[in-house]
Image (cartoon, rainbow, N blue to C red):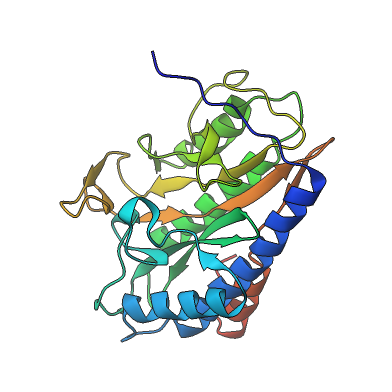
Length: 268
């Protein structure tokens, strides 16, 4: 039997550091959002994020993590997560999921956002909308005394009621001095099950939702996870603090969505 990992509760001061890192992270995402257009390589987007994070005193959480080579995970269309930036360029109709982390002053913040570029079908827009909405529904389940399964059930039931797939092989997680801490935060589960939430827990909640079936495969690069049926997937993520009577988002989409609204790219 494996050793059970301890859930590390954060002090108010530690949570504030994560929030400040979340601000840098949100603005780094926004710089990337400004550059999303046809013909731009995913490698270029990675360079933009890395430069912004370094210029603001942080380090990209992902670069070097278990050997991952880049600052961003950029996952296109049928790729769910862990896509490696490359010379591949963005094209009209692409779904682009960007996951990023910032490490500074001893703590990480982690968030992800999915974009639709140019002419995409209504079913893809609906997928992105549902995935983001399910993230917020999951967060509304967060408060001391509730269980991780309550959060997971909210995400699963909302998306499955629309016919979408919920990836089982990948889950959210605790965040703190380590990028991935206990507890695991799955996007599927039963109410009343799982670890009990306590004030001071910091969680990365990250629904990964597919337009088709839920099954995924790992590519030979050892990182890239794509849908088995090659249908598109979406991914949204916030880092969140459990407070005495609810939750507090430590990451933000505010800067991303200001950019998207100005560019008439916001799906809301």
